[in-house]
Length: 173
Image (cartoon, rainbow, N blue to C red; front, side):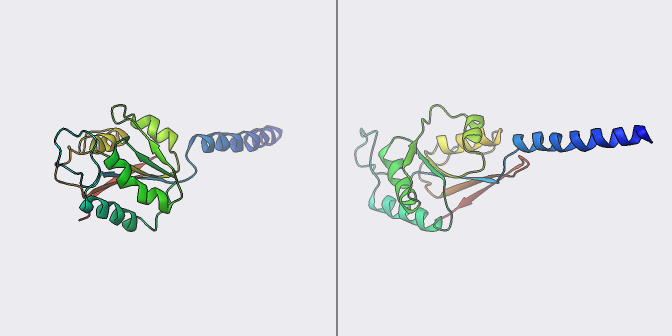
């Protein structure tokens, strides 16, 4: 009987601490990451490597912001190009956020996941870097480059509190 009492006391003190340790390692909230390519850019000057958006592009940027208006973002990422910043800015403005600039040549899915654990994030990139970034976050090569004339893809990656990931690709014209 004495043995059972000691076992009970040891278990009652050790199990809660094990449960607390596990809780510390897992995220406290579901994270959702939205990835889009920049809107339509001005192609009139082929030598311009940093064009602005066209009127249609500015309209699409506003449409993205309206389509995402019911989502409260914690962070809005953009590459440091006019077209991506102009695509991201309306959504950042609606969420009272400054743009966070990232380098599309240095995509690290694990670092991104760690830095944005439990957050809701918008990432605006390019036809090649957006699917590459999504693939890096997912940990596999699921999505190919976006066709250069396609500015309508929306990738959504959700990471549950248990760490499980789900993803979807939507085309929003």
